[in-house]
Length: 222
Image (cartoon, rainbow, N blue to C red; front, side, top):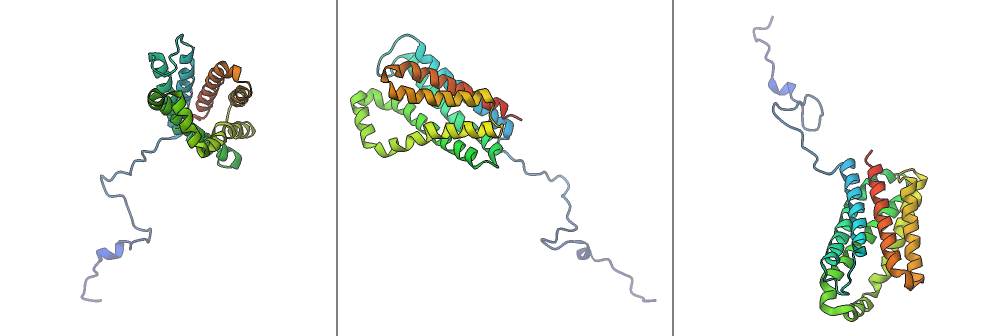
C-alpha cells in the first residue's frame, strides 16, 4: 500500500476548450435574448402596413385638390402612403420565411420590397419636392432619372404578380388576398392604357392592394 494518499486533481474534471464535455451553465448566467422580431410580429407589421396603405388612398376621396400637396388631407395621404410602404417592407419577411422552398415566391417578395421603396420615394417627392419645383420641374427630374424609372415596373408590377402566384401555389397567401393583388396590378395596367381612368383606378387599385397585403399579413401570423 502506497503511503501517498490519492489526490484528485481539479483540472482532470474540467473540459478543454471545444471538448463539449463537462461544461455547465454558471449559476446566475442567462441565455442571450434574441431581439429580432418573430413571425407573428412581422406578420402583424405587414397587416398594419397594408391597412395604412389602403387608408392613405382613401384620403384622396376627401373633397378638395390643391395640385401641390398643400391641403391637410393631401399631406396626411402622402405621409400615410410612405408609412404604409415602410411597414409593408418591414413585414414582408413574414412571407419570405414561408417561401423557403419557392424561388418564385422569394423573388416575388424581394421585388415587391423593391417596389415599396419606389412608393416611399414617390411620397417624399410629393411632400417635399413638388411644392418647390412644381409639376414642370418634377417632369424634368423624372426625365433625368429615366434609368430608375425603367426599374420601377419590376417592383410595382412583376413582384406582386409573382408573390400572388407563388402564394396561391404554396398556400401562403389566402386566395382572396392573392386575387386582390392580381386585380390591383391589372388595374394599374388599365390605368396606364386609359389615362382618363387614372384617378379612380389609382385610388381603387391601391386600396385593394393595401387590404390584400393586410389580409396576407393576418394569415401569416401562424
